[in-house]
Length: 132
Image 1 (cartoon, rainbow, N blue to C red):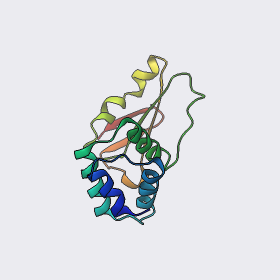
Image 2: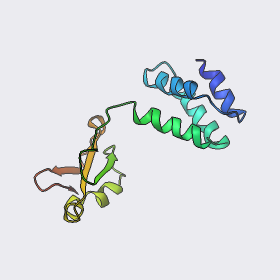
Image 3: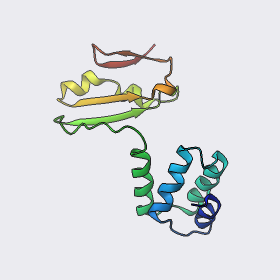
């Protein structure tokens, strides 16, 4: 897969093939595609757009690029991913797991280990997340 050709295709408004999109993204994760090339592609994708199929392929490739938790055994699973960033205001809203539990909804909140923020403290016994 040639990253320059891949970027050029999107810049020209062409639709990507599923295997090319997957190869480009996986190449980036393996550090075979440079940051500036991904930046150029993101700009082209923003300006030219991705069709629904390309959006699905992008989402699937990113979702399955790491560990995927199977929550199908839960009666009403809800998932909210947080990178642990300081500006992640949604975690404060979703973090009220006690409120969800009261409604019979189990919530899984998982934060990326490499991007832990000191702003959040886990209180696992209470099942809640709160800002210090």
